[in-house]
Length: 139
Image: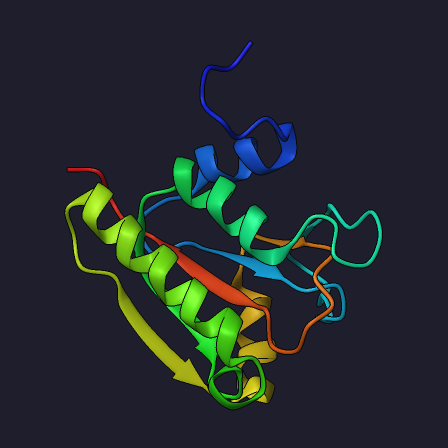
């Protein structure tokens, strides 16, 4: 049995296969998932699991170099935006590297998800609770 906190076999396998600059998307329950990326659906019901719970579990196992966030989150989900920035700041400290954050319009964000290795769907039902994480290297 794995010792790390991430127990979901599909997510763990995707993270293990990521190379430098490959990406993984974590989305809310409403984010459209394009054909191409692997779909990993964790949504059980409204709010379960939350976006932040999924992001915390994934980033515990994934080396993150950069993140893409929809710029609309600042205005339409300010509380979650603050929590997400705090999570990324903590992750920077743990990893010992700067994580570049890029904000893009939500329509462009949805286009970028097509390049992800996988899209992980949470049960989050608040607006713009989505992030694209780009893999870094541990050396």
